[in-house]
Image (cartoon, rainbow, N blue to C red):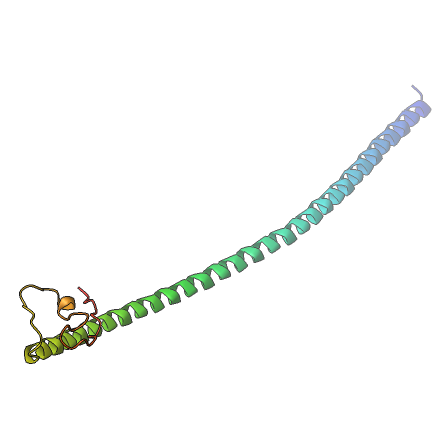
Length: 149
């Protein structure tokens, strides 16, 4: 082989290696650029989803706040109801005491009144101690109030 042929073969080999290297470099750059575009698209989609997720989080927080407010209102209502029940119980107790006092006054009046002819053993319930109308005088008596038990 001649020197020219060897030089030519070496030049062709170098050109072939450079051509393969250039093609690999261009392919690598193209693949890198494609990955950058794809990553950008993924980031854009993630940003949209992040906005939607943020809205969902805000809605969930708002709902939780409403739930806390409703629970506080329910607790306040329950406390108010308990207070009213307590007041009602005190009122019932006071009314029962007052009823007993009134019944004692009726009993005392019945004992003093010569026109009253009731037998205490025949009526154990204090609401039945007074007639609706006194037959001898024709006067209406006070209404009988039931007692609490």
